[in-house]
Amino acid sequence: METVIKFLIFSHVAAGAVSLITAPIAMVVVKGGSAHRVSGKIFLWSMVYIFVSAVILGTYHWKPFLLMVSVLSFYLVYSGTRTLHQKQVHLGKGVMWYDWAVGVVCGLFMLAFLAWSIELMVNGTNVILILFFSIGGLFSIVTELKRYRSRNESRYGWLFNHIGRMVGGFIAAVTAFSTNVLNFLPGVAQWLWPTLIGTPLIIYWIRTYRKKLDNGARITDLVQLNKR
Image (cartoon, rainbow, N blue to C red; front, side, top):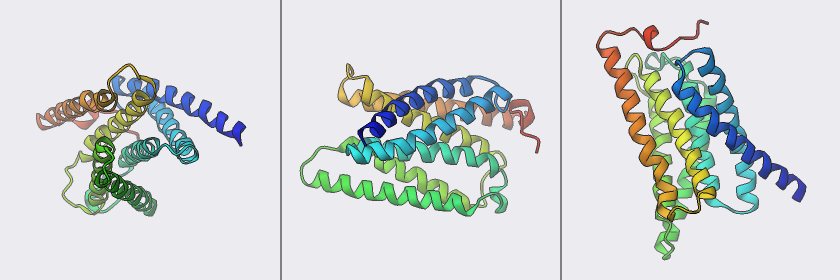
């Protein structure tokens, strides 16, 4: 068993390194181009492996923060990828049963984690940051599930959703890296700096694309759409 755990630790770290390299590449290259698609797919499957290995390692060594962040980052990247296949969600198309299943399972996990963190707070244990991330994670999941039923999403809402969730998943991955590696930073800073830097970037990118589209740009001027 220890051999398996050691392999999972090594491969988990390796997959984390891959995700930290490929995500920035996908952010800076032409959106929808071959480099974007390849780096994005590598990032996705790296995050899937990180999620699976983190669930095992986090349970075996009982690291609740690792569990929480792995579920949150996985769901953000999963939903951020699936939104590319849900361009007509406002017409009731594109959402599959497994999208609901993944969302509900992850939502129940985050809800249980939230209840657990509240119990710890009531009993005098300071887990305010875990509570904060639990609330944020649950909100993100509920928002996506509500989107599946909504018919009010804008024509290019899928693009904004893709940007927000993929970058959000990267923020969660960097947060996990920071709390495990950047020990020279103060405790709170280890948790919050990725969010404080990444969130304004998400807002900037979404506003930039929205403004260009509102000013008459065609979606094909901004994104190389997959022709299928």
